[in-house]
Structure formats: C-alpha cells, structure tokens
Amino acid sequence: MIARRAALGLVAALAGSGCAFLGYGLSDYGGAGDDGGASDGAAGDRDVTVGPDGEAVDGSSDDGPASTDGGLTDARGGDADASAPCQAGVTFRRVFVTGESYGAAEVGSLAEADTLCASAAILANLTNGSTTTYQAWLSTEDAGAAARLGSYAFPYALVDQTTIVACSSADLRSGHLWHPIDQTQTGAAYVRPTTCGTGPSVIGVWTGTAPNGDPDGRACRAWTSNAPDVSGVMGDPHRSDTGWTSACAGLVCAGQGALYCIEVPVK
Image 1: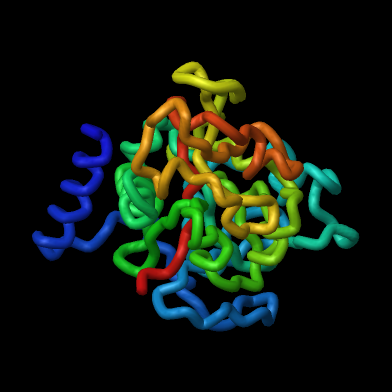
Image 2: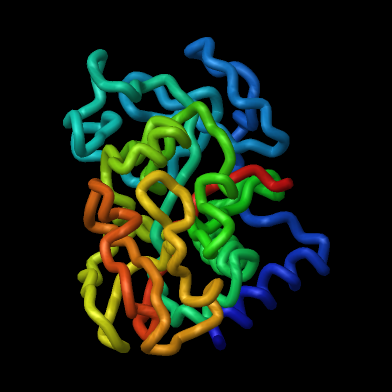
C-alpha cells in the first residue's frame, strides 16, 4: 500500500507542478522512418528508429546497453536477420517487468496498476517527455489486457532497445514471445524466481490474463483481495511460451507479484 500511495503521489506531484515527464529526448515521435515505414500515427507515440547495426539513428538516443553482438535479438529465431519476422530499421515501444512486487490488493485496480507502471518508468527516465507513458499488462474479470493495450503494428522491445519481445500487438496475443520480459525498468535482469502454489509464498507477475490477451476470469476480485481463498493468474517473466502471462493459476492472491509494463502514447 505504501508503494502504491508513493506512486500516486509522484504522478500527481508532477502533473500539479506542470513539469514534463523525464524522457530520453528522442527526436522521432512518429511519421515515417528512414526505412520508409510510417508510424501508427498515434498522438504522442514514441517511436525509435534502429539502424542495421542495432544503434538508434535519426537523432534518437540509445542509452540502454547493447545486445552482445550489437544487433536485434530474439529467443525464437536467434539474432534477427533477413529471415526473422522483426528486422532492423523498424520502430518499437519498450516493455519491462517491475523490479518491485506488490500484494494483489496493493495493485488496487487497473488504473492504479497503470500508475505503478508510469511511476516506475518516470523514476527510470523511460518516458519521452509528456508524450508516452506505461500501462500494465493486466486484466480484471471483465476487461482484457490486450483490449486495453489496443493495436500496434510495430515491435515491442526490452528497455535495452535491442531485444525484441514481440513483433506487434497481435504477436503479444499469440501465446509466444520472441524473448521473455525479463528486464526491469532500470535495465537490470529480473532474477527473482517464480514460485507457483498457494499462500504468501507465491511469487510471479500479476496478469489475470489468458495467452490470447483476454481476461482469464481470475483476477483477485479485480485486484482488491489478498485473501488466500481467492483465485488469480500470474505470469513468469523467465518464460517466452504461454507461461509468460499464464504460469500460475488458482489460489495465488495471497502472494506477491510484479507487473509487466508496456509503453503507450499519452491519451
């Protein structure tokens, strides 16, 4: 509860002061990239253009660590090349798993989960001015994570800006990722193991979400209950199969979970 209140206070303070969110200072906010691919045109969208060597171009900042060979990487097809579905010279949005974990009731609601993601991104300098924010990959019993996220035709990458997680929003809903979402907002590896089961020893990532992005139907009473007899669903940030979003299901609501956070335009 303390973490959630602090997050709410941080975002409110920034808004009240008229301060712009911290950002990378990237100059490519949409439009066509050098590869000829237009952005989706969403207002405030933060799109980064990546050159063939994996470096940001067109004035974009690339402050994150590079992959081991400097190129785009993925888990299903190795290093991205001409045969990979995601290639260099595309635009993308960033995703991370929070380094912090929360009780289910501490998450509170979809809106408050989004605030936790936004706060974590601000503190890590991941927002682009006031044009982008971060939204939780989270469902309630009647509102799905994929529907909340909306459609996006370009890839999602970890905060290192090189490791491709999914090639589009449709790819996120396919049940398989190109790489696990195993990097926190600071770029550090998420090393906490996932522990399924019941009771307070359960550890994972809160999702309430089926592999296709729809509500699973178990969401700790819309993220308001830590009761040991209430059901929820957790993902495993070390997995790229369906377990990334649906690894632990059942009486998990007394446990602790991180959140997956996805970059979106400010509405």
